[in-house]
Image (cartoon, rainbow, N blue to C red; front, top):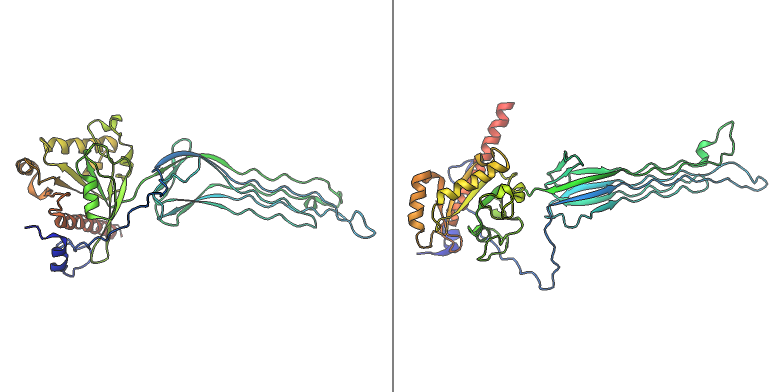
Length: 380
């Protein structure tokens, strides 16, 4: 009898345990409902890669001026220096999830021209472009310049030009009234490729219509589109699972992979850049379909084609749609082929065995933290 989520959350209490313990995983907290989007809400398309041109602000020109006083019409030069042009700075913020707001051409603010009476022009403010955490900037040769992987991390993409010097600067013993000044320096200009790699702890990998989006909706507050046709998910979605010890684990759902994705079939494997940063994987298999082992082998092969060694990361094989006809027989066959310890049966639509899945996710996560802690100690 399916007693629902309320029964589990009210009847099971998580025991206290030491950090990084993998004996008993904490119980995930119950999800909260989120309001539906308004009908007139503006649609923001997801962008995770684009080419941009960035120019720093120009420096202000120096001023040519001669001081005029009572009974001394030519009292000497008093032209001030121009202000410095502003830099263009990219700064990572966790409140953003797309690059759709970044313009194709970005120009910094210009410095103010120098004034009379030796007054220097105002330096321009820096132009700060906020980008999501996980943004990578490459130069024209596609070399990685910086990866903004933490909130607040910044990169000066283009520096502003230097302000020109006014004629007061050029006054000397041999030239008391110079009538020359410098033009403000031009700001730097570069072409960049900016790429977003979504940061998540767990990545959902599977064929189209394997139930990845349904599973993400069932265990997190994320709301990806769910439909009966393939390639429903066209961009990555990230949801958060909260545990009762205040630990948070992020789970990423990427578009479905098919055989030959590395040859740009289907949606290609460009979205696998988001999976590349995940700590561990969940291979989601539609267990109602024949030859589930073949499906698993194709998924691992596509990961290897994208990045050698990627499929060797910690993972769990999840047999979804166990409630459908023929699933039990296919599950037994797959369990005999890969072993029961690597396989977990669920039904994302019906909510069957999702609590155990969340516990297994926490075990993988804690094991990874424990291994990193051990490696750090060994290096010391």
